Length: 120
Image (cartoon, rainbow, N blue to C red; front, side):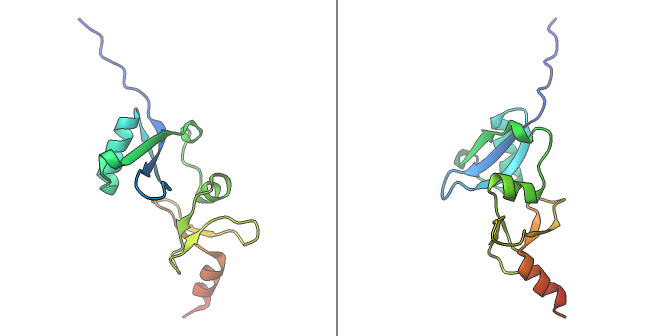
């Protein structure tokens, strides 16, 4: 009689498309890189063979906030109001995170958001 294999704990993987600019796409938690790519395929409809899964132990404890991803890891998200990339730059006010409970988080440039708040 063999002992049942213990399930491996989920670990963080950064998923990217191999085609194009290789920008980060998502953080997926799975026991293996193969499982992470399968989950990403199920979530995003990404072609399994066209994605890379890079191990990210710094995210094992949980996904950082959208502002941390932008400030510390160089990520960007699409501005909800103008559609341009919103990222953290020292020379500009920090982007406004409107909702980071879903993926990708809803983010806006500070100026776009201020303009939208005063518009009727």
